[in-house]
Length: 113
Length: 112
Image 1 (cartoon, rainbow over the protein chains, first blue to last red):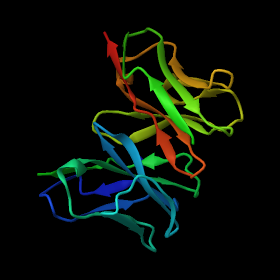
Image 2 (image 1 turned 90 degrees about the horizontal axis):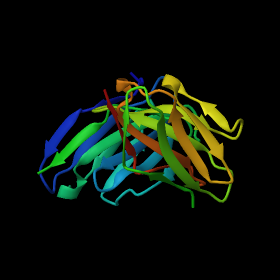
Image 3 (image 1 turned 180 degrees about the horizontal axis):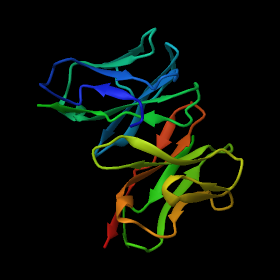
Image 4 (image 1 turned 90 degrees about the vertical axis):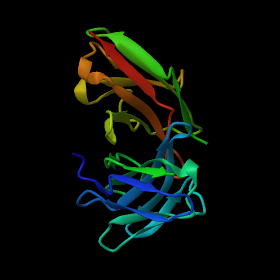
């Protein structure tokens, strides 16, 4: 158990819909990272927040957005969903703002029908 | 831009045999390199990391990796494979943009 929690575990929705994925980092960690893992694209970094502020941005689509709240939990919002958005979404956390040792959550499996 | 390439998407070894998973990096600055393992239906777990302190890095579960600048490599090894080592392994590099760039992964199968 990494100490990072993600909810929900599974999510099934339809094209065009909007979903929110939630992540709680390890106690004491200030950074949260979001990743997308799919068979064709592999593991892709989406975005990082550090202590409430956006720190780094990767291959995140404009239809996706994220935020980190004062209690340091984070949410990833995915809108206008397409079939190709079906993937595993991982959250990770680390103590510092540097993308160093990261602790990964168990992931949320999103299926878009 | 920093990147890593994992050679071999699938490696199969017998129990007790040497495990060698290959990773080459591309970086214009001294890299920070990592190996992560992903067991089925789980998130990634850090095995070890290289941060320029020592070229031979020891990690968890008996794994180690050697940083070779001349070969731009950071291969992962374990002297004797266990059935429990069967998993997907990812090499990663921290980029100047402060994001982690992962390789495509190598699936390790251990035969009894």
